[in-house]
Length: 247
Image (cartoon, rainbow, N blue to C red; front, side, top):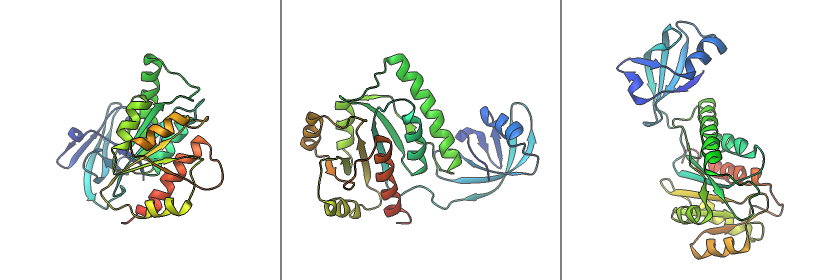
């Protein structure tokens, strides 16, 4: 079933008004017709509005509410991924998969060893593109919310924010003791906030690691193999999703 997001104001009683880019996708790509069913979320209340199409025009798809599905699809913890800016288009893949795996927010971070350097104009353009990818991934995975892709942050700003989480995780290739990683993740309880800080291709600089320890980040190991930047975040999110699902 196709899933779309609308603004809260688009839901009026038992009528749901779908506008914007979704109209063209529903009419001309999916070729849906009157009577077909859609899944709609407003991105705020966690509800899944099941509705049937009443009419289709060039500017709007008008639907009638049939029932509301309230089964929780979101994880019981708020997970934010802080991702060191990677090369090429890796960030697009990272955002897509992070949304599918349950992150509520993705923060691109400019770190010392990042190859990519974005000026203010390019960063704004990238953020707009990344947010669109997040919405598409949220629709595909039937999320109840559209995770936010934040503006690019500096290392110091991101570190201060990430360290304030209840469970601040920083996977580091020099960290040891897998039992510590297992115990730490195993102790997470519903309602806690979790931050996951991932370095870029070149890894974290030594001074970044030292500063992270000073602020209370939990340096953890993900095993004996060195993971690529686009793999490390997905690994942590996959573990968290497995541990938290249905808690």
